[in-house]
Length: 146
Image 1: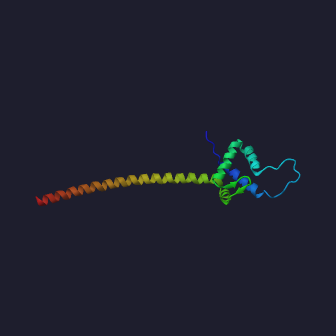
Image 2: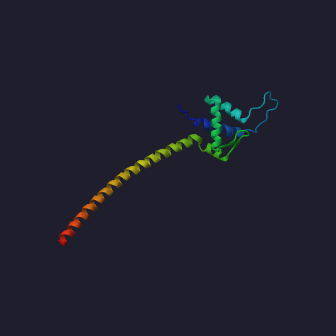
């Protein structure tokens, strides 16, 4: 069984961008516990929302790092490509574009096979016609000189 982590990746990227945007909004003084880091906050949200294991969340963070949509998690640094990628639809839109591209390529390949077959038949007909005309003129030349 394979899992599709498209929604999770989009949610992580959106959550990180939101955390990044609201990171300096307010400071809470006199907290009894130490404040959570951005990674801990987003990890908790993801585990709660999608019921993933912690190692899966770390793999998803690593995937975002490898795609260069985030530069680092602690301290949180999001690349411009990540912000633009998320605003243009994220991984869900990327998957749709890839699927439509696969369908387009499959259609083009089918058309090429069909046209190739037609061209092969046409070439065969021309070759047979050329052979017949060559034989006819060879017979005419033989009759003329005989």
